[in-house]
Length: 218
Length: 264
Image 1 (cartoon, chains in turn blue, cyan):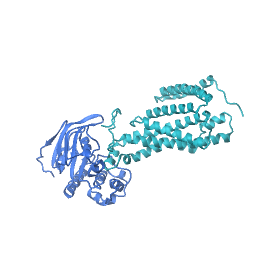
Image 2: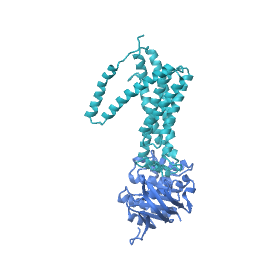
Image 3: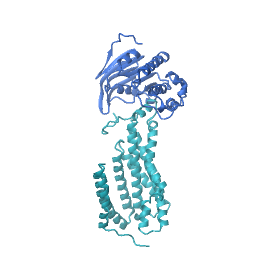
Image 4: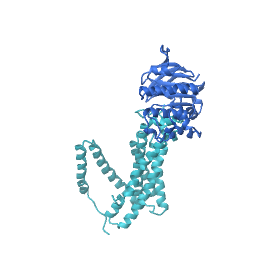
């Protein structure tokens, strides 16, 4: 199993947002849907230990997350956060940030291509890009660390329909080509159904399986 | 050389007319500062009068032990006051206390070793007070900025942590900015000193009848001592507080509106 949550209770801003939550997330693509404020982002933050639960256990491939080096975990379980979270500097600075900290080399052009961005973007200032392009830079930045899992926090919430469709195509492509596992958090049930093998609805205290949609995924 | 100036309470009271102007401006423009102005005037009168008597006793005894005690009290109050400005920095008191204590000790030790001043209460008390006061202001500004910036940039800090950055690496650009904001006011005023304003010591010496050259030399010594003290205090306060925003596992603590239970 990719992730297992046992009786997890987590707080955010001093408020309990997840209570006694138990769930299993398998390899492949999992979509987690729910209204805002229900704790989707908090759940995602538990999976790469940006936060720890106040009680309960989170396991990654059978091992308690707290047993392993937290920095190595975050490089293996990459997070693409909601905007705005770009670093100052160029697109290349952003893409190289993680690999440099890990003393690894990285191919900026290849990462950008994987994220659906022309390598010519590398020298441009990240802050000057469109929101859709910034989203792709964040994706490229996470991919540069060659993670085996990607956590996607509302990857298209700020984007228009055309850009959303393009980003979704890129994500499907990444799944097929790299065999990456995804945990995708979104308020859009249809998006989760288009991108994920399995869709779970986050409700207070439980992750409930959402039956497969009748409509085709693509 | 003329004798030192003697000022009566009536003269002090008369200058309150200008404070009334400040109060009127505050009321007129509804800046909501009239209460603060009143408190500032009352506190400065009481505190300075009290310290005047304390210093008189200490000068009379000329005991280094009393001087050290007075400076220690100043450091303690300085750390309390600065903490009030750094409310968004968790557990800011100890870093501030250490920063002010080390800055004051180091700079006073330096001027004593260099023989700028003799080790007498008459010199150590005012110089120490000045160093601590300026270091306190700069450290408070720096930590105030640090706390605000960490809250504002929480998403970006989380994003860098998610890329495998340690807590220190993730906060580095913000810590750098807060250091700058703590030090820039003194650096700027040092640059323009003599052109746009006359610093307090020089004004005091001139008013007390000293020769302008003596006044300038003493002022230069104090400016340079202050620069060093402020740099040291700001650096220490920022370096010692920045880790408090994070857990040992490089997690940004839950920055809830109430700071009573940081972390989880």
